[in-house]
Image 1 (cartoon, rainbow, N blue to C red):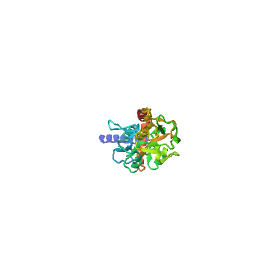
Image 2 (tube, rainbow, N blue to C red; image 1 turned 90 degrees about the horizontal axis):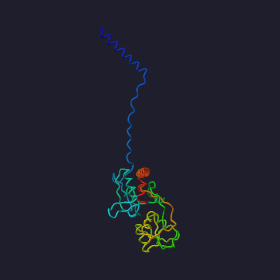
Image 3 (cartoon, one colour; image 1 turned 60 degrees about the horizontal axis):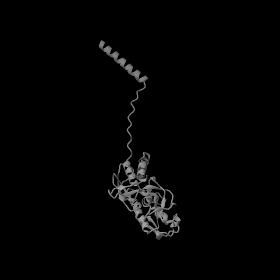
Image 4 (spheres, rainbow, N blue to C red; image 1 turned 90 degrees about the vertical axis):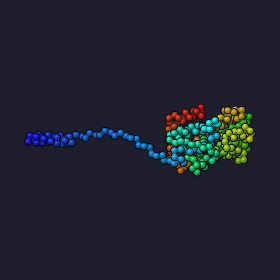
Length: 275
């Protein structure tokens, strides 16, 4: 009987304690759960080959793109930049040397994922393909002549003269749009090197091309070429070419490009090729 009474008293005390606690005390919150970062959404773009970024370039346009004569490797400002973009996207970058004037068509027909080859961003080109954000600011189209040429001082002086350009470039379009320039006098070459060789041989009287591409010829061969003081066009901006049906790739490249610019890698690459 004492055992029964004692047990009952203990039970009553416990019940009273439970009631008191539940009625007067705010429940103790559980510990804040650890936050697991939400995985980035799957890449919202398509590739011709999973894991690889297929890039077209006209690899005879130093210092932007070139093929090393000794190693056979692609090199240049555009190449270094695209390689860093590939790292950001976790993709292997595969290059193909392609005729410049047919690259945009190749992107339209999806033979490549994208193209980088010192493409000036223009309204006409944007009707056919998409451009990423610009990655290079160029001084524009420059006229090069022989050192003893005093007749050509600006673009209007090209009227009636034979002028060398690279096929499919903004330089070619700019020359053809000059009043008085005859279509048959515009000599289009597959590369700028061929255009400058034609100038050296006297086959043309001037060459028009991007300043950073023309500059090495002036610097390295001052006895053969010089710049005309007045440029043919104003500042231009270069962009990476992507098919209009693949906006996710354009966006992804833009994100990678912004990061590369922000963390200093862009400047390092720029200094390497344009110091």
